[in-house]
Length: 306
Image (cartoon, rainbow, N blue to C red; front, side):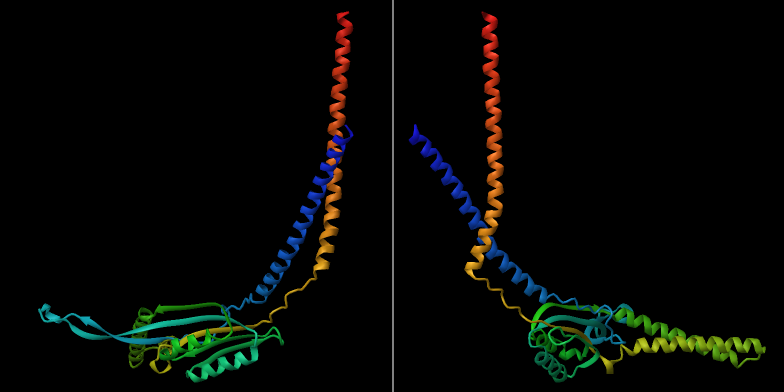
């Protein structure tokens, strides 16, 4: 009888010890995984720049042109082969490059050298931050022939977070601006011709005001058409570079980890054992009460039968 009790007590102690060890190993493993995750996320946070070019502008739009051969139809509907015509396409090409740098000053110098080597112009520049958290934002106008070369050089600097190239056709917009210019010039010519005819002073003043209004519209239109001028053809590269420093991985000794895991296990395990103890005790009391009620009920039935 005593040997059976000893075996039961031994099994209970063994299961309790096994539970304690399992919880301890879980906490120890969790500590390793958590520290690695924190270091990884911290380094990633260092690389999470929020440079935006939405409010970054060079004051002008960069456009380029490309000439290619198209096929035009012959007048008169003859069966002669279509004639080759030259089509001048106007387009806007923009590259958006965001990088991070651990050697900010050296790589900034490298970027500027590449810009100069590819005959590009810095049209807008914004630099901010102190050592360790510097930020550089550039809007670069680059000749179309050098666009791809400069783009490849810039994405090789630092660590690239994102890169994007967008090309939009602007031929129709260019044609509409030219058509509007011709219309305004014809209107101005007609207004000037009206001045040569006799009339009242009020009518003359009104004509002058209309001519002045047309001149203002032509000036604004000339600025927009100036962006399409073949002598100023550029593509755009928006380049940003953020300084970052790699954080050293936190090193925690094994003894410290064991100490922390052991303290946590004791704090968690003892209340857990207490809860289980009270649950078992409550169940035992409940079973005892039920058994006593059954005995009482049986005695009552025996008395009645007598």
